Length: 326
Ligand SMILES: [Zn+2]
Ligand SMILES: [Zn+2]
Image (cartoon, rainbow, N blue to C red; front, side):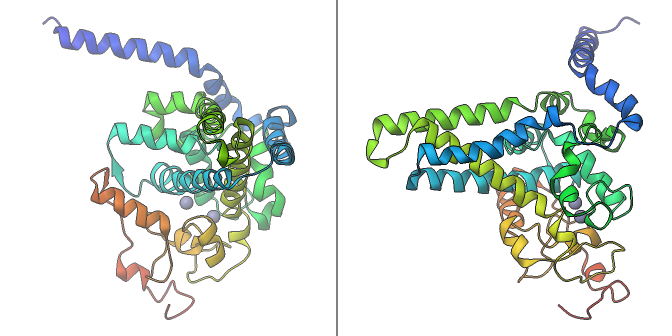
C-alpha cells in the first residue's frame, strides 16, 4: 500500500521539524548528557547580565522618574508576576489546569517576558524541588544550602543552567516550547525595546507626562524586572523559613501572608507543598490568591479549563494537619 499525500506531507513536516530542532537544540542535548559532571559553582560569565540588570537600576538617578513610569513599572510587575505564578508555576510545572496548544504557547511567551529563562527550564527545576524538598539534592533549600544560595545563587551555577530535562518530557514534546527555551532572550529584548519605544512615543505626543525612552526602559523594564525576580525568589528562600505550617509535609515550607501579597498568592507555600496539584493555593476564603482569581476569570472566558481543586477530605485530613482548624 502506498502512503497517502497527507501521510507523506506529515512525515516531511516531522522530518523538517526534527532537523531544525537538532540544529537549534544541539547544545541542550549535550548539556543533558554532561549534566552529572557539571560543577556547582557560580558561572560568572553567564551571570553577568543578571549582575548588570541590578547595576542598571542605578540609571534611575540619571533618567529621573515620573508618575507614568511608576504606573507602567507596576503594571509590568503585576502582569509578569501573574505569568510566572499562573503559567510557569501552576500550568507548566504542575499542570493544574488545561488550555489549547496556542494558549500554552502564549502563556510561555508571557512567562518568558519575566526574564526567568524558558518554561521548560523553569518547570524542570521546580519539579526537582518538589521531588527533593529540603534534601541535600534540593538546589534551593535554605536549610541545606543557606539563605542566599536558595534565594539567587542556585540558578547562577554551571549546573543550574542545565536542569534535568528528564523531568519535563511532557513539555519537551512541543517544538515551540523547546524553541522558546532555547531562545529565551528574544521576549525580554522585545519587551525592553518596546518599553523604550513607549517612552519615546509618550515623550513626543504627551511631553507633559515627563517621561523619555530611557526612563521608561529603566523603570518599565529594568527595575520592574528586578523587583519581580526577587519577589519570585522569596518563595524559594523566605517561604521555607518564615511563616506558619498547617500541614505535615516533611519539609520546611511555610504559609506567609506577606509573601502571598507580593507574589499574588504564592505565599501559601505550605498548602502548596501539601497538595501541589491544586490550581488554588489559598485553601480558605481568607487566604487571598489573586493568581487563582485571575485563572478563574480566564476559565469563564473559555481560555483555560479543568482547574484542579483540593478535595475537602484531603484539605481537612486530621492526620496531616498540625492545627485542627483554620
Ligand atoms: Zn518550596
Ligand atoms: Zn510548586
